[in-house]
Length: 394
Image (cartoon, rainbow, N blue to C red; front, top):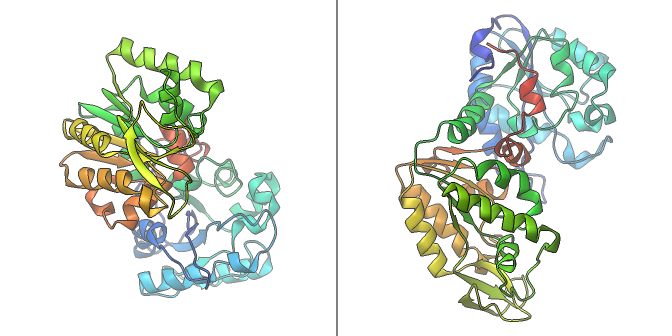
């Protein structure tokens, strides 16, 4: 970890602008349905309050697109955070302005306020310099613990760091160390399992990771493009025909580097990708016309499991089937159980993969489950995240 953290600066009696990612799922009643992102930031918040900081928490929720959306106010998050911390967290109705300044001026050491949804302001996503400067005037120090938002060059992620000393929180530190450690200094053998719907959304990940791994396992809808590149029919599965040459080149690159590339041997196919649809299991080389790949089959689960059990480090990004539909979740769930039982380094990329692991209650069995979907994807692509780049170096 080459960036400074909260432990490298004095926060006593300081106003700390703490950017977090509390973009949590809410149910139809407005209740939080998964508070894992809030819990992930508790170590940083507790450290700050225990060291007499005055904490100003900033987050976004949803995509209000620069306007006030009542259902996306952060008051329910303040209530949940209060419960988890056992101390009051005041939810403010704005994120800048006289009321906010008065509330912050009234803070005592160890107190916490939560600014209103930062994305209610159109200047946030525009990384407006004046808006960033106004936010910076609320505080003395900037701590970024919002790994999940750090691939965005927004005012509260990047802009504020121009005006305040900027360091990482503990979650940010943990994310960088886990992802960077797996990619740059893995215990070997090292495998990456990449799934999801489209090759095009994972091009840069595949490009970067094929140079680093001993085995590359491909699942999900994107496997159809790989199978088609080898001349097999894939029924009604979506194929990115403009990526077929790319996939052939990637396959050749893997072969030249001695990287084992595993594709599904069999698949669960469906007439429709919906609950209750007719399904059957077929060899991946014999997918019938009119049917769509929905999940990996039992032979593939066995082959992937055998390969994963040989490894010391596994990075996984993207489910291997349409796991949101129970009939097509077996592959993803089976591989999660396999990884949970292994005494190896397991790094789960954010987004749908993390969601599946958390749903199964097995997050604590993994070495690291990323809180950032897009951010972890860009990290695996080898990109420098804007929200990390602006933090002070040690």
